[in-house]
Amino acid sequence: MFNTVFFKLSIILLAINTLSACNPTEKTAEPVVTSTVFSCLTSQSSCVIDTELGQIRVEFSGETLQGKLKTELPFHIALQFEGINSADTLQGAQGHLEGITMFMGKVPVLFQQNKVGHRLVASSLLASCHKEVMQWRLWLQLEIIHAGGVKKQAVFIDFDSIQS
Image (cartoon, rainbow, N blue to C red; front, top):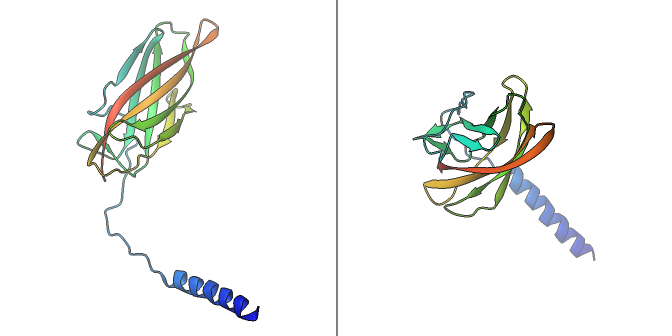
C-alpha cells in the first residue's frame, strides 16, 4: 500500500517538475496589426447581396494577403443593411462559417449591434488547413423589421483564406 502511494506521488512530482522546466520557444515574428477598416475582400463572391427587402453589404476587417483573410488571426465581419423602404431595419443576424475546400465543422458567428455605424459586427477566427488557400462559406440568417413585422432572410457568401 505504501509503495503504491509513494509511486503515485513520485509520478505526480516528476510531471510537475517536467512541466515547470519547460521553456516555450519565443517567436520573433512581426507584431500583427489588425485593420479597423471594413472592406470587401477581392476573393469574396459578393460584397452586396440583393434580398427582396433590400441590400446587405458584407465586409471584413483583419489581416489579409492577396485579397484573402489570413488564418489563425482574429478578424471581424460587418453587415450593413439598406432597405427598399427607409423604415426597414436589420434587427439581428446569426450565422456560421464552414469550409468548402475541406469541411472543418461549423464555426458559429455571433453578431452584435454596433451603435456607431448602425451595423452588425461579429468577431471570428479561421483554422489553418493543409491547403495554402482554402475557400469558406459564410451562412447568414438575417432578421429584418419590415412593415411592423420581422422577416427572416437566409443568404451566404464565399471567400478565401490563406495560411499565415
